[in-house]
Image (cartoon, rainbow over all chains, first blue to last red):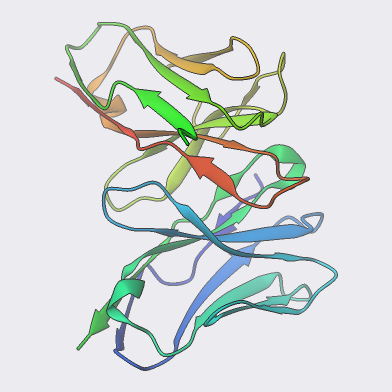
Length: 110
Length: 113
């Protein structure tokens, strides 16, 4: 069935470096994507979203890129900090059925 | 500011027992969801309710039933618990057409022995 997936289960970066987390999707009709952050012991929290009429959207230290041709999106975190340690999910809310990808665990090395 | 409230927070069941997980939201959201999260796995959608009066199967519905009692409440029932249902369960609500994010409860840690 339709799904949202991630390329890597874990990502380790040096504090201060930029992080890039990738996500692939399979539903060509999907037109809206959301990135969530989940800290240990908590439920996911919204980071940023993007609609299919956009290629790029920027927030505070985060940027999401969408490539509809290859059905791929990425989350870029600038100047990664210890507080960014978490699991990051992309999600597809197509027709209100909110489906999450597997997740990427981001760890920060001092 | 309660948001999404789940009860209970922890539960231990014996194989074959039944129980209902409760979820309530106070944000007047139309859509509500139940997920399970196993170690090393992402969130898997069990059932969802796009609007009051409707429920639909998600990715892993077997062994579960749901009831959208009203706009605020969405319950998840395990009729005959199995060890494979040991997991953390999250309820969420959203109004995706109006605001992008889904709001999550604090989770219910269920162990089936």
